[in-house]
Length: 414
Image (cartoon, rainbow, N blue to C red):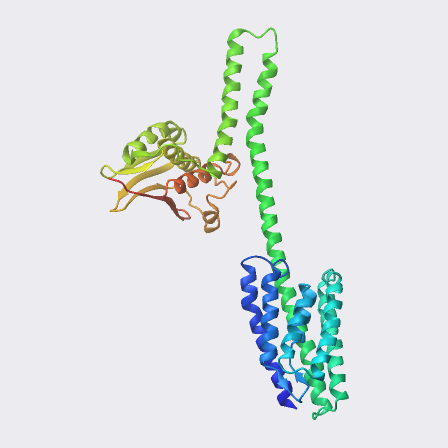
């Protein structure tokens, strides 16, 4: 008695183990239900495996777990006619006898029946599907055990009941539960991705709206003032200049977003890194003096990289300006370069308060700023995009109370 039950339990363990590689395969392309080809292949392989491990207990009766993959495939992927046909063909290889005709009748009927009820089955709740599939398997097992008793098989009733009415429903219940859990996890994963995308769109919309509304509101106000007939020429020109500046500010915000989304290196040329950095230091010196910050440069011998001069300037102006604005109480900023055989390294160090690991990990994310309400989160984000577009890398190290160091690496050219 134990041998028949143990044999079917071993068969069941193989079906469960076989399920996982097929699910890994299906995950590369989508969920179990959306990709019926992979699921149907699993059911086909499982049915063939069950027949290979079948146990003949009489001349006309062969017992195995073929009904387990049949019910899973019939209810979950609505392929009962194909699976029933496969089972009938494989059973014919064991001989055209009374058992074959019984299989032909039972699987022929349930193959059509399952095809009709599968859409209704898939609309059931999680627990309902597991209970229904398990109960349905028990019903099919009951027909088999009834047939076994009718032909007076040389096995005890307890053995046949244990092997035929406990193991198959147990197998369907376990496989159904595994399928439901994995499918639910995949659904939650896709919902999470969708919600993150929606959140990103909402954040971008809010950020663009906020950054563009301010200069446009100012420009609209001055346009209203221009309507006054008593406005003298000097005031009119002053207001027009302010309007032009506000519109240019709005245009810069849009350019920053476009640079982040798809930075374009319009013209590639050979850049003398030291000369470009010296030029940027002179441009930013008034801003540094305003914040009581001393900027020093320590550059190595003449070194070159290839890139877009305008984008290179934009990148390091954004970074250095962000560093300056993060030091409201003054401090020191050191910029130095280093040359290796293959790369050019640019260091930007400050003597600020430093960043925690949490803030450091978020540096460069859209809409994240280290300058509180003063920052928009665009500057470093755009700078990182430009560095990537020029084939470079960025690494940031920071210690609380000591300061932060930006390390930029670009491919060296001669």
